[in-house]
Amino acid sequence: AQRVTQPEKLLSVFKGAPVELKCNYSYSGSPELFWYVQYSRQRLQLLLRHISRESIKGFTADLNKGETSFHLKKPFAQEEDSAMYYCALRTGGTSYGKLTFGQGTILTVHP
Amino acid sequence: NAGVTQTPKFRILKIGQSMTLQCTQDMNHNYMYWYRQDPGMGLKLIYYSVGAGITDKGEVPNGYNVSRSTTEDFPLRLELAAPSQTSVYFCASSLDRGHTEAFFGQGTRLTVV
Image (tube, each protein chain N blue to C red):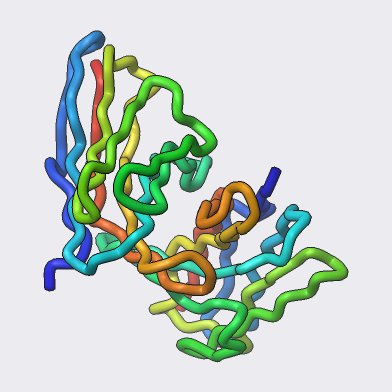
């Protein structure tokens, strides 16, 4: 069965420091991975997806199939990055379309 | 274009009561999902649907039922509400599987007392 693990429930950094939010997945097929973000009092929204290999708001994430990881990184954190971050996995095969989320990481960026 | 709309936003239920959480989307999306969000537990998938007339269980389906009679609507039914169902419920939709974005509703905060 597919599984997404985010080992850190809470992560605190100071403004300007690098930040890395960890995500590991378990899935036997070809994974489709995403990072979603939930800012205070806002809806959950897509931050980035692995297929796009894009940088959004300074964040990047690289899929490492050997380590089954999809860590989210930003070289210089900003206070406005404070939010809840979720890693998500979409599966194919017999459960195609199923979208599974990790436990989430609350990021706090201190001034 | 309203996106994904959930009603109600808040609800208090007594143990044993039943209710339906409504979810509708106006983007003609095929895929729809129901999640519950518990503190420290992240988002747990309750049920999902890949099109009208097709639904499947997620990780935590017990105590819930869904139906998908139209593309737009995906209601979640709670029968015999229990305190363990106190949570924030989110509905989401996406156009297709694969790498397409899922759009979320604003959530329904449910308390069972």
